[in-house]
Each structure stands twice: as structure tokens, then as C-alpha cells.
Length: 261
Image 1 (cartoon, rainbow, N blue to C red):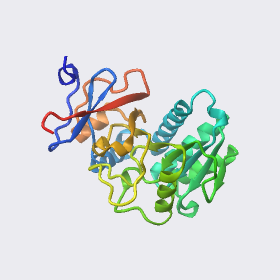
Image 2 (cartoon, rainbow, N blue to C red):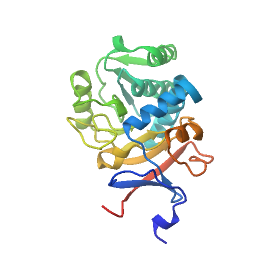
Image 3 (cartoon, rainbow, N blue to C red):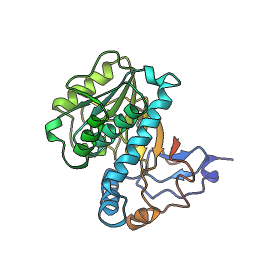
Image 4 (spheres, rainbow, N blue to C red):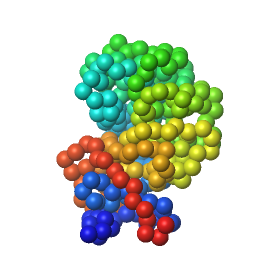
């Protein structure tokens, strides 16, 4: 039976999408643009919950678990470098670094600008440091997994400055790459890259997939639960047919060509 007829959820209508997303049961998973995801975040933080701190904790834990899966049984002996920007995406990366550190991983955090961290991401850095976490100005050598938490869906124009430096370093490093939400430098809505962009082996995207993840730059896709209730999506006008995660906190996703493409 064709995938389209096996799907039990209805995708939000979009203009000529290049692909859609299905989980490992064949359900279609609706995708959001960057603007829609910003609105979901706003509704959650100001009206329905969870709080930003709770969402960041959930994102960081799922990111850490995905990193462990990518590295395999000997993950504690394999150095991990987390590249963190100054926004929410960076905060999720820092949170993941703390979870990894707490479980015995060898992990180092590089922040694009520690001085510009504020709010919850800054709080997460404080907690990470109290856990004995290392923060350096430059990525260390010998890294076996790079966690990309530099920009995420907040991209505005081509990356520059320290973000650009870290993206270029990542793309030349002999290490696996795990991106949080969207590979840094990739437009979360269109999937285009206005400048340098990360080429990820795996991307764990949060809440719902982003329409721009049709790009092969994102690598294999995982959907991570950050605790947003179904009612929040309904406020946005997005229909969710039944629980998205249904007993799991991470779902593997597959891109499927749209019939009209």
C-alpha cells in the first residue's frame, strides 16, 4: 500500500511543498515554517506552557540522547564538542552538554559570544559550569562528534563573524555532525542557504519538523518532543490527529516526495 494511503494524520496545507515528513509508522507529520514555529513558542511561553526553561531542558535531553546513540557503546570515551550560539538554539546545546557531562561524557562547549548570552541560555551555562563543564574559545582537536547549536530557525541572512568561523570549521572537521532543530546556516522555511551552512549527518528537530528540512544538508531526521501540548498547535490552526509522540520522546522521520513535485 502506498505511503500516502497509510498515513493517518493530515498535513497542514502548504504551497507546492517539495516533500512531506512521515514517522516510522507511516503517519504524516505536519511541518511548520520559521514564522509558525516562532508563534508556537510565543503561545507556549505566554499562554499554554511549557516555559522556555522546560522546553530547553527537554530539547537538551533529547539532543544528548541522540548524541549518545550516534557515538555508540563507547560514547564516554569519544570527545564531543558543542558549538553554541547566544539564542535559544545555543541554550539547548549547552543544556545537552550538561546532560552529557552528568553522565560521564567527554564534552567541551564553545560559545560564539559568552558575553552576549542572557536569560535562560545564560542560566544554562551557569548550571553547566557548576557541573564541571569545560568552556573554551576554540574547538579542541580530536573531536569525534560536533553538536551544532549555533543558529537554528532564527537565521537572518548569511552567517558572519564567529558563527561563520564555527560553521566553516565544522564542515572541514573529521567528525560526525549532529544539528539541533535546523543545520546552522539553513533557512528553516525554504531549506536554502544564503551563505555558509552546516552539512549535518543527523538533525534532531523540535516540536514539529520545519519545512526547510527537505534539504539533504540536514542528513537523517529525528523529531524531538519538547512538551508542547496539542492545544498550542490548535491555536495556530495546525491539525494534529492524535498524539504525535505516542509513548516516545524521539521519532525518526523520513522525507517523502510530494505527489505534485
